Image 1 (cartoon, rainbow, N blue to C red):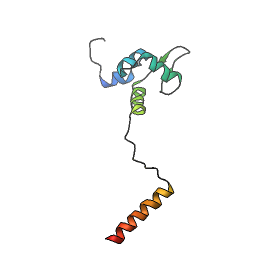
Image 2 (image 1 turned 45 degrees about the horizontal axis):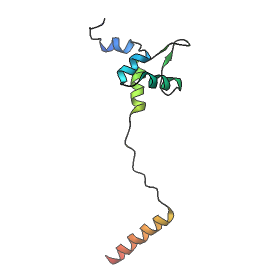
Image 3 (image 1 turned 135 degrees about the vertical axis):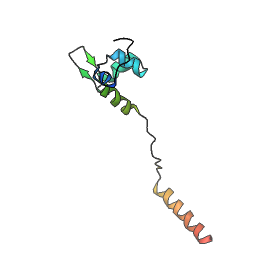
Image 4 (image 1 turned 90 degrees about the vertical axis):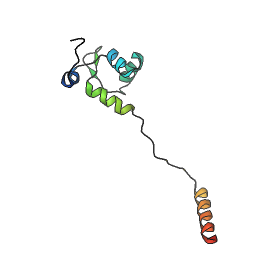
Length: 95
């Protein structure tokens, strides 16, 4: 089937080797191996030496790797809060 584009159904049912996944993600084979050895990424272990990935695993890996913007959390001490509150109150009195 090489050279013939696969349908979405065919693509979903195909198992990928670690090499194929690495190529698809654009990362090294070493990284893929490290991620499944440490159980960081979902995978199928067919036997002691054979690891495969499904299309669903690929999608989960992308989701796990997605960098989402963190909400801005400002850590302050009680003294900082008291100082800010005092400043706000003094501004209010001046107005």
